[in-house]
Length: 421
Image (cartoon, rainbow, N blue to C red; front, side):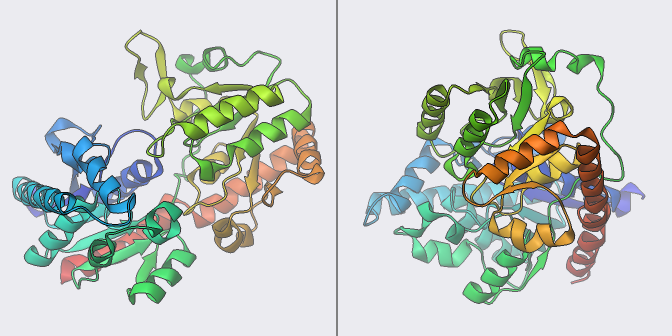
């Protein structure tokens, strides 16, 4: 497409960096937009995008001290201090100016907002986005990965007026996208807003490349001995991930194994990580918290150690554990089937309603580890033919239901709708 006819799309979120689900899915969307003739730009408080297409706004990051103070003032007390309200509006106005600058600098034709109008970790950002969209009329796709009403910690608050205004906003310029059918239903029930369901995807048309020289030492770097079972828990360390169940499973398998936990604790503190370390010690299960050497791409730590991409780790795993109690969709599930790995899964609601009915096969638990869970795991690990049949079937189902081609088809319709208005 000639450069004079290319359209510009601006992605906005609190961060586009690392291996969190929002960043990963946004990158896939950007790839499809580029294929459809757009040039993509990114605004966030943390970025790992090319500088020439990036617009860094530190206070868009939900971890910025000023934003954390606003969050605490809105969700940690029984009333909101007027000082908090005043600071919130100062930041709203500051971020609003930044968004206008982002639109003007890159001559944006459309905005794609990634979760910043769904989860109120950065309340001023959500308010500022809502006002800018309303004032400019810029066509916007709001991509919602999870909503505040799905998280217990947001339900007790002193900021309902802001949540009702911007999380999400009901504006004619905004097309809403959710990642599962339950979110679509709840959004309509609670707000009257209709949405398009676009699930998370993987590039199933192109299988993962073979292991290269860079990753031949992965097991050694992760502390997994040659005779140990390598069990990968590819999630953040937060309570809803249910990692204690993976530890219990390792204990009950009674075989030499190491549980490798790939991500950091994130935005919910470190108490759960400490609890897991104590529990693993009590259960005598070897665990490795390795987020410092797993990132969005290859590199080096300040001390010179290798940093591996998450895609470098999966091929070496023998088993993936995913015992979450709640997920908006389940990126780790898709990753496991993409890399043809058997997976132990807690049958969370979206898995039951949207994923399992398509015919996927997994080692399942329902809230807790049972003897049957242990027996299924042993059977799959001990039978190479069964394991191959399971993982190949899952891969083909992934290609059918959760491929880039599915994303491209659904996103093209949204793009056409937004650009023609």
